[in-house]
Image: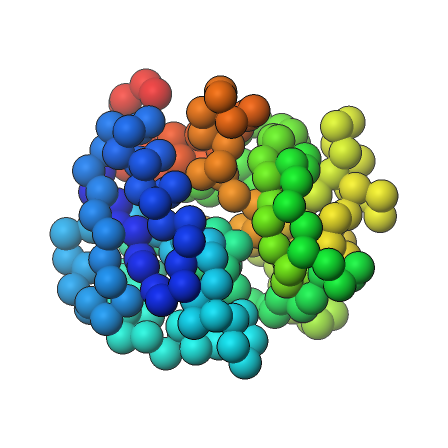
Length: 234
């Protein structure tokens, strides 16, 4: 399965994503510059974390106008898999591939730490190897991670089972104490209605090797491979 990792000016997690795909999962992967528009050879596009265009205006607000984003919109509309991590999630929101917006963290501070997230929907290409309500330990690193959507949008997310992950404690309680950034209803990640586009604030690529303290991020990447070839065991 061939992956692409998009590189914007200011991306800083592109190498992490690339190494997980190439060295841990042993899958073909390429960096693609944000001005490229040909995605014909890829099955999954990764928009990595970082500070695209220095986060000027708003996070992801300038990157959404990069030439590659029109190609990614078309790619997603045709059913291609797209995962946006942290800044990548913010870009997907700005592009309109996912609903809602990201605000400053409630405490107005940059937060970098491991958190727990609960799998709310394990019937997606990105979560099919997770058990329903499975708790994953994955780090966050962001200044703007406070997910928001209006009342109607939230109702639609729930109706369509689009909430993929919620912040929680070790026991799975999604409450105010386990919410690191003030995100509405502890939302840590969502999918589009078709389920082929995932945006999440936590960094699964930073939890893909035991030496890093957690391998829980591999559930997400291996789910993608499982979806592509369900007969394989990973």
